[in-house]
Amino acid sequence: MKIQWTSVMVDDQERALQFYTEKLGFTKKVDIPLGEHRWLSVVSPQDPDGVELLLEPKGHPAAAPFTEALVADGIPFTQFAVDDVHAEYERLNGLGVTFTQQPLEMGPVTSAVLDDTVGNLISIVHQAQTPAE
Image (cartoon, rainbow, N blue to C red; front, side, top):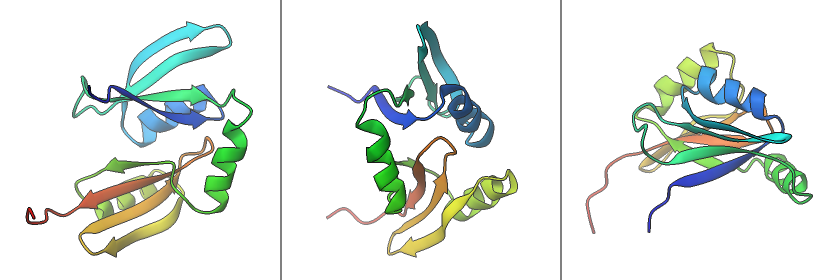
């Protein structure tokens, strides 16, 4: 068993696609029309055959209250790994991405939290190598 797809619920699939590709740098993998919505996924250009992130429409009645509560509490919906949080923060900040948390070091983990413009907070994270226990 392996993780092939994971989802982020979005207010608008087209805006999400623009943000996740043009700002975050992901690549569109699949785009299949399904009536009003699409099976729409992006992947890391560093791992084009890796895990796909589905940009899921918030169609279920529980989706909006759930994601709104997370945002209100400042909780990221998901996390993306980066090599250098500070450099990625500067790059994204320069592209106009809004951050709710600047880079913060917590032991071996450094993270920053951004607003994905489609209803979610997303954390970019780097975890320093720690000795195996």
